[in-house]
Image 1: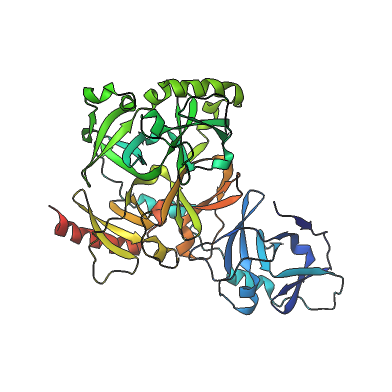
Image 2: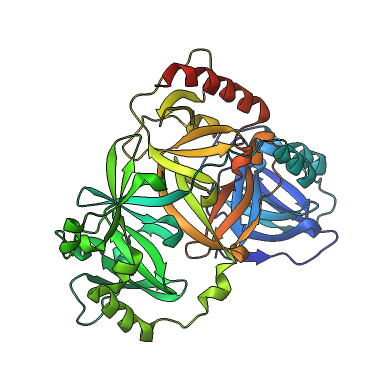
Length: 475
């Protein structure tokens, strides 16, 4: 945590600070503390003066740029300097270049109309809970379909595999420097890493499947944390692919011939991904945990881990899909995500549509509009990469894909680490309803309310496109 400078309460003293070449002063009695500017998370489409939010002891603090408030300079600049935590009917952070001193000179002038300037720069316009409830209740529920199985898919040695999403607790980038080796392990066991339950044993899925396994080649890999029978285990995989939701009739039992191999015996079923024709090998958590190497790792880990009642905490954990746009991370509830797909090359462009509409794609015979989230979130445009993904959501009767730079994690976050998002003075920023505090690295991640991703007017535009294009692409 950055060092802080508490301000002693005073009714007459002034706090003098610098913005550019100018010095200004405010009433020190309204100053709660002064902290160094740490990482500030940008809020897309927020007010011009809003630099973003910052983590202040686990709570999101809105940060206003005083260069913008005082001088109308809205240009983006590196977030450096000091944060004055100011009481303005609630805590606000004022970003300044430097804090100079406290002064007893009451003859000098305070900033003229500071309160009204702050009101103008950061006023409350967020919808009330009643308005949100009324808005959502007016949207029809998606049509019920046959049972769907959600799978997290990943690649190992170039092959596509999957695990039931309900068994996945978290997904994170593999960090080699956090791994502690344990004595005389089986070949598939890599070591242990810190986790919320104490320590987590991690194993190579490639080795468990009898595939070629390079013990030193984990750079860029991911750890998928799964749980079975109350025991957690980390599975190291090469690359996270997407989230598939397959109908039960698209999943077949593995042929008996494939059950004879040492590695293939971990495969429970074969799924058919209908939009691509690919097959996905669905792994069995039960069989993975029964593997002798895994059983040995869990037995050794039993003495090292902290004993906790995981079932007591289960109700307080919520899973979020974390994705990147530019240098920022955002999240949305996993339960709201239909699936995550690679951005296809074949996108049908639609004339006279808003700039954020990339076009439509044919997803299993249905036209799905693709929304460019870089344009929506005011992030500089870059070419699509191999890591680009489309997060498919259903909003009422509308289904749309939201294109992001990368999907990086599935993270289970406790209720105590979640808080309501500050009230931003922009209806476009109302898509952010909560903020997650990631205690391990001090990050603040803005969380999206999927139902608010499209305004009512935008929903009408996209729905109209979808209705017309469905007729065009239907087989």
